[in-house]
Length: 103
Image (cartoon, rainbow, N blue to C red; front, side, top):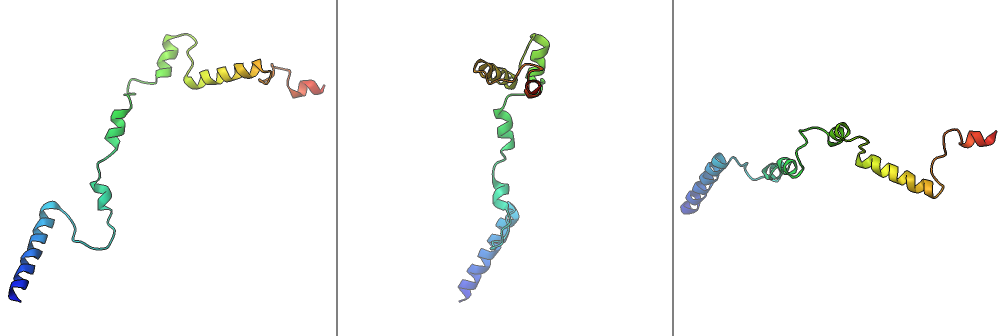
């Protein structure tokens, strides 16, 4: 019986030392969120994946250098309007909307 108590005491002492060294908490059933803090941070990973945008806006620089520069969004809009006009479903010319037809 005495051997069992001594073994338990040394085990408890080792646990305390381990917690002091590694900074862990004693085991309990309460959720602490430590699992999330142990995970590797994803911010630097995402920052390295995307190119560096510190030089400024690509479209702003493009407008300064090239005459008639359009961003991707503007290009898609222009192409869509062209296809709609070819099919006869685009926006009407100025002054030929619904109100002009009612008169």
